[in-house]
Length: 130
Image (cartoon, rainbow, N blue to C red; front, side, top):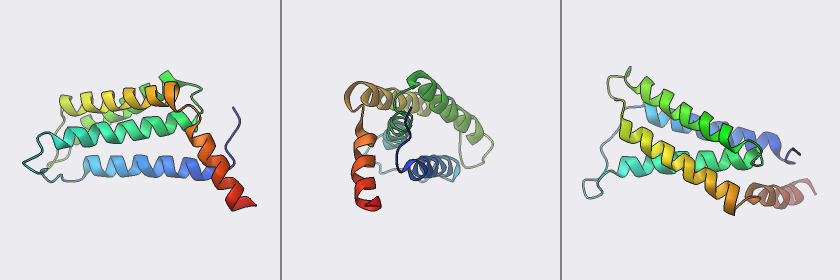
């Protein structure tokens, strides 16, 4: 697997994104707008859709099942950890939304946008390095 030209930058953004997901998952939550039912499930889906797509791209889709399992397991660990915070609670529906987001992000990366990050890396590195 060839590394990206901006490899360290991409890994930094990946772990920054995971830190944001972790912080957002463990901080006290505010109720969503009443006129959008289950908006929190959409947030869960979107967070894990983006993160799984991103890490699939970052690893150039070399180990798609491993990436899916790691991120889905991480989401499960966060759901369990939420039970230890007085303002949060574990939710099976959140875990399902996380898993569906991770699955869809994986499929998009593997089947449709296989070289998405490679193209961005090439364009940015050509502009930044030259």
